[in-house]
Length: 112
Image (cartoon, rainbow, N blue to C red; front, side, top):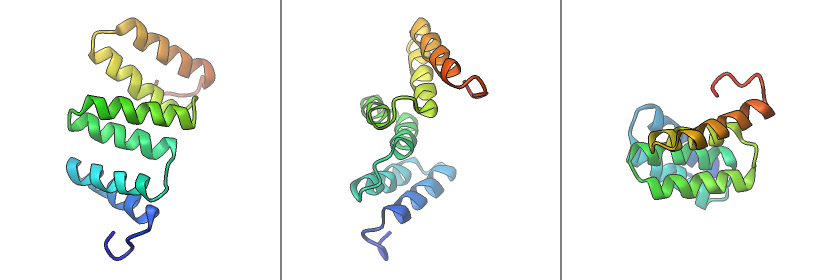
């Protein structure tokens, strides 16, 4: 990322690699850089939310999921992660409602 200080794509790629290697703080840093450099997309926000969940930063998780859904309200990966968080918090009815919405929009979505 230092060699390409303005590249959102490079920052996103480095964040994805760090995430696969389970280097959560490093992944969060690179994904945030991608956002800061203009790569604001539902995918990047959802990916950063997943990393922040690993870091147990639930406030950041909710913030990035809200951004992802503001960018694309029907983005299934964001809705599924949101459902998992609700489930883990004991809010099972909300989780089921979120998953039902994903399946309603995309009946082929197996991960829901």
